Image 1: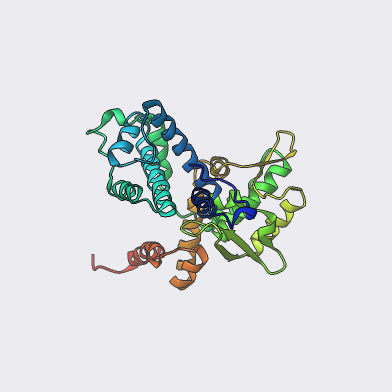
Image 2 (image 1 turned 45 degrees about the vertical axis):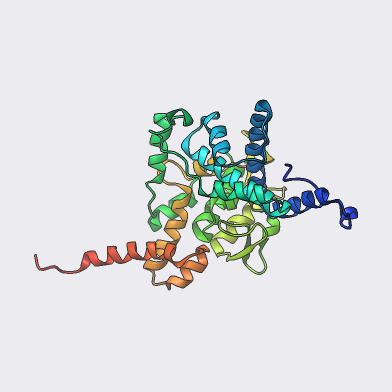
Length: 319
């Protein structure tokens, strides 16, 4: 199956059912992000190669067959979870576009399939390196920055004026507009409306690929972006800087953006800071939810509970 097949508008009136199925797969897969399609294709290519080597039908991907495939390709637990999720999505798409009952049955079985625990299937998983495990643990220990720390972040300088302008723009987008690092990576100048003072976020977390959210551009963000725009001639905002200060039309990775925050903070701390400090300043919860584009108010309430708990520290308890 090629989820990235191109639709030829000259063949829309075809009576070839197999071609029509491929066109439907392409149409539906096209609504997914490029990263999702790439992940699907990587897993499917690995799976079909495994099936061909064993002379078995790839479309008979029931729970037993997919579990055997995963067993033969040991990986970290999170990677195996992702592969299983890819297989579920692909088989559901195949079932919906072909109408075949046997494929629909296999897709239903995959939906019920759960990965075995590490102790029950040790050969299925690769242990993460201890140093990497510790690094991830440290990254999860998020916190909200103080106002002084926010100003310190934006006052920092890097080895070249170009790197300083770019990094300050990226920090302003995260600290004052609440963008996730993945959203910063995808952001283009065409998404920035300086005149209206808004930023368009396309295909954000828990949104369809073609969904657009608009967030306000505060003055701190506008100034930082204007300074960076005067240097960066390319369409992307988060691009690489060479050692001599030359701007390179290659997108930054999420890891590179994490490093911009330094050792004392993480990218998601920027959103945590925006939510916490806004609530402390008296902003309504629904306004903070809209500002951070939380799909559920429950996510925003986590920050509100934290702020309320801090306020209770001043309550007199009589001893």
